[in-house]
Length: 432
Image (cartoon, rainbow, N blue to C red; front, side, top):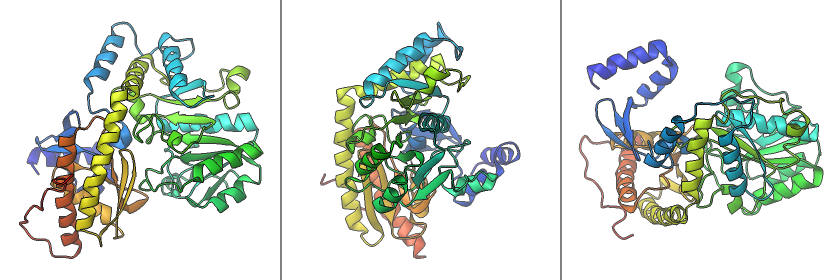
């Protein structure tokens, strides 16, 4: 590490976030992101990393995507953030596009500046629509860090701030345990069930066949609303516009964020059906957000939706998803006792390792080998592995090649047999 970077990190610990910065350093991750372009990040020292973390999908279309940047620049010729109190040319245009490109019956868009705020809006809307307080969610889940969103997530993020929900307000059940979910829904006293379609921070474990559809049917019987958190899994990452659609579920509310911004201007939204959005007609002043649905953000979001809806984008996602799966299968065959699982829906992937912190070790090795991926905070055995929608075959092959080498290094380190020099294994995708 250069002296300049070392000095900068000390300033960071003094003025920004000492705990997080020190944790990264302890894990051997000393990146200070400087330039970024496409699916590449550059450290302040000039070192290049391939980005397969994408900050939860914020950069699914690449860093500084030229089309999105051009759209926002165009907007700046005429608009600014706007005034959230009044009808807006751009908010209405974006709301119309979201109604067109979301599941049937979702009509009203309620805007926020980020995904957690949008989750709060969805939860509040559910309470108003049902006149019930309770929420049902999953154990080991994540929906954000704001007031209500942190309460329906894992206590890893709520206990620190004494923000746990009262037991009467939030009930958590194990993922993929349909019996446990049915027992809670059948009580008929919940405002909503809120689910990430594939739980991201838990390492993307996949729902069992029929699991999500059964939950929606249970909700309908007792008047409980179904909120689909698509902040990380939406916008074509599953191979379709919304991951929940691939499971045959039509939610009462869909929450989108992160990638909706194009990585250029913050914006998020709740897209709600008539019942869920009833408060908009009763008291449209009930929720306000100064920066929610900023008009410049709407320019970015409209371009994101346009790009994601293109047939060639969908085709590319399906192509690279298959190509990656073949390559990952070959790598798994090289390390069957350690690399034990591939969880995949499109380019949303979790790689499972047979070690309590296996993904941490693989992350560290990948970082040294020029790839940035991150372990799952709520399951360090699983690595979040999420190439972008517009990645090409050449980039995917390079990622797979580096992953193959990195897993071998991680195993050696875990076993205490790491060598100072090593021979790169055969290219993982040569037979693909």
